[in-house]
Length: 256
Image (cartoon, rainbow, N blue to C red; front, side):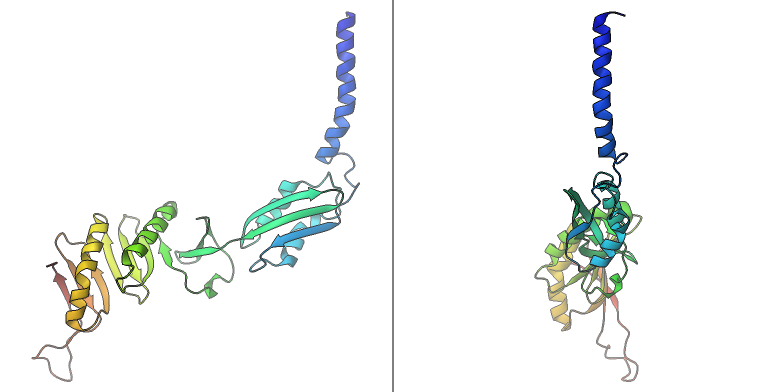
């Protein structure tokens, strides 16, 4: 073995002797109980996630050595709490974990028991049934973004119409439906939904004015040249007896 090779081996051994303890400290293998974490500093909104919940989630990591605490494990423990959207965490020498917790901000309801967060993600959490004023959206889970986009578009389209949008649903077969705040429904179908909705809005004020009421239970816009509308109330015809009023009617209306 020549002298050059011996020098190379000697350098490699020397580097290993220095590097291995350093890597061990960084990975928590050595000095796992040295410089223990004693402080937890949390920045959060504390609307749905309490400080006690956060501390309980990281309690197992408090007291561990500074270099032994793995931040990804701490982050995962807090992220698993209900209402948590995102967690940012870091260590500050010599004994502190600093954490920023962002809570989910519900944008809308999705289906029967889930919510859509401000980031567009679906989530479940306790106490959501008490939240008021959220639009009701529904559809296949892989169409969340599409449904949100159309809800925002329909909201703009209905502005100034006197019709308050309460929700949007997309069926598994691709059929769209609007639900107003008062519970009435507007069936849009699968094709030409923007054109059909605009045609309905152009004609609806005149129809409502002619009846003296804009209350309806269902409007079906899935017609090529018109739409069907079921009014909430209908004036009885002249032949109807006073004690037996005529039921609400469904009629196909055609734009003028």
